[in-house]
Length: 299
Ligand code: NAD
Image (cartoon, rainbow, N blue to C red):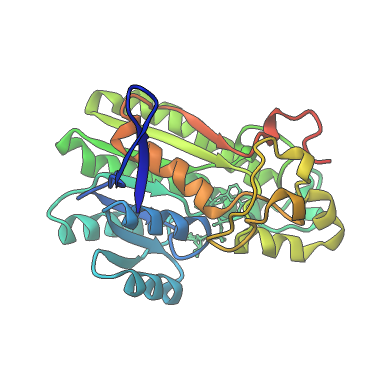
């Protein structure tokens, strides 16, 4: 791959090899076995990183790791269990010479999609707890153990995948919304504390990426599916073509579902993971094609 540049007079210069933005770095990606996490893993590898996939899906995680080569490994890790998170970090450190540069808190669950589960009048406390444990506690535990590994080297970048449901109401079940708001808050707090140690903490907030998570949610309710699908007019960042990662990359002219691809989220995560964002910390980077700037959010 190559990228084009321009000299000072506006003339095109000879393409140079695409710089590897994570060259030699070690990264852990939770929930990296599929969906957005898989796209992050693939992009990190493309940019020279050695990656540990930490996921509860052994079969998909191991298959992806072996498909991508020796620089990628899989460790079983339920992010809501502290011992698992500690083990994943220890695995990365022991495999890669005591080094951890990037920790990506991507694993997450949407929770039940029934009408009862979604109402504040009838939600189930056990289900609420389950979603908060994976999404919010999981992210906090990731920050904790990543930071413990990064502090001695006085460097590192922690990037969490929140959601536009972490910024706005009315976009998901209460537990999901609460958990994603929690990630945005944790990101700010941890950034305040860890800046002194040379560690940056940021998050990325996607909207509507056609991954198994969203597709399963649509399947649970056909009426809601129609209502919740982002429509073309909601996407201010218009794109044609795309779809290289599969899943929702249609051009707007043929739009039947979301236009965001897992790769679009991965690019934002890559930026925050890499040294190119070295002065950005405590930030929530919304990647939604402009949806949250619209008054008519859900059509
Ligand atoms: P997905 O369900 O397709 O993939 C999630 C991955 O996380 C799976 O590999 C799953 O096995 C893993 N996982 C689930 N629970 C885990 C646990 N306890 N410990 C470790 N791994 C676990 O979902 P996705 O759409 O790729 O979502 C990735 C992240 O992006 C999530 O945090 C999600 O909330 C967020 N997000 C997604 C969308 C979207 O539209 N798809 C929008 C906003 C935010």
